[in-house]
Image (cartoon, rainbow, N blue to C red):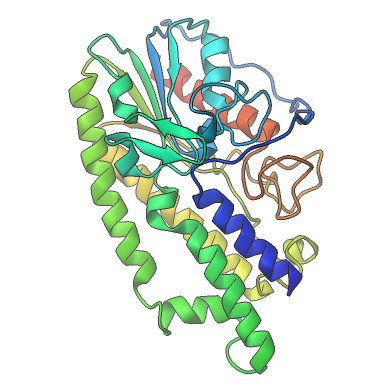
Amino acid sequence: MAAAAAVLAGAALIGTAGCSAGPVAPSPEPDRASPAPSATPVTGPYVALGDSYTSGLRIPPQSGSPQGCGRSGANYPSLVAQQLGLEDFTDVSCSGARTGDLTAAQRTDDGTNPPQLDALGAATRLVTLGIGGNDAGFLDVLGRCAIENVRHGLTGRGDEAPCRAYYTTGAGRGEVQRKMTTTGERLTAVLAEIKRRAPQAEVLFVGYPALLPQDPARCAATLGDGIAGADVGFVAEQERQLNSMLRQRAEAAGVAFVDTYSSSAGHDMCEAAGTRWIEPLAADQGLAPIHPNARGQQGMAAAVLAALRQQH
């Protein structure tokens, strides 16, 4: 039961607007070569938009205002700006952000983040956007899986994949798809607004890295009794569907999609500390559960840089 509670705590953490954090040592550098410079140089101003997977929640050094956004100086936008030598760089990403927070102020536990799209302008030349998971309720699925697993354990009856059963034939039937459709519609509007406000900018829509492996057995020790083993594959399937929807919306809007899922395979939260890009429920001291660590942000930065290289 303790592991189930941890899943719920982790899901709640991702949905919060911001969290305080003490100083911790960053994850070691991944063994990745720096991408070669683009044939046609990428220029700024560069504006980064997004949620906690962009902001780098709890990854030191935490900086920027408001502090409740959990913005790291080592998140992937900062690394991209450094690699490209872009000094005109603005990061307005914020933990807990939904699409509505792009056009309206977002209250956090420690300060208010202005509407993110207000950072855009006619002079903007590069935009990265990483958002949609909170709208789609992806982490709500994790929490529900923990609840259904507890219920299954108490009764000893029902499907061996209780979460899948809940969302396919039970009370939650159709819920995931409804949220996915609504989120997609919001993203279409957001991408159109970004292009309206920054008509000269190159826009990259950044997807989410792999949280779980394809093989449920590899996560037994990490998840414990929090999520039924048979449901690990179901949760991974939901993330793939989320990324697929993000890609479709990006392509329909004429925007480049950055696939961070493929490159993060084998670096999910069930891997060892020296390999994983995503922190597990029992995260390393000070880091955010079910979020990218410093290594994950470096991997995402490499994916963004590779996408830019292809464009240029």
